[in-house]
Image: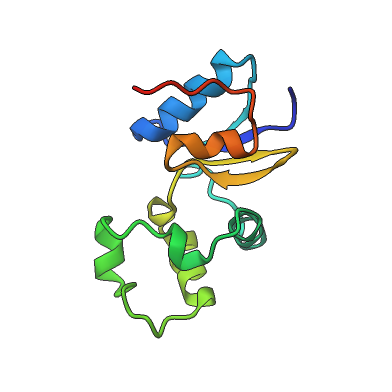
Length: 124
């Protein structure tokens, strides 16, 4: 299968698992190391929307930058949250998988089945 992209962080166990599942299914995705090459604003916003999420839902609240930037403030709008993720890509939840049948934030890993039902996911 072609046309599959994973937003990957090799330091993240979930991201490594999703990438391994894709490869085990015979899918060699385009691997976007989004910490090294962050998406532009339009791509980030479009990917979040395609996954059916909001910018707040894809923030990583345990990251140091989250607290430092006061991102828990409910008064911050989507534009401010996108600005923060663009400035600090570590704040972006991972892994996103973009496939011909949809886009998902594959956390938990089982969400991968929603867009790639043939991928075998076993309990680990």
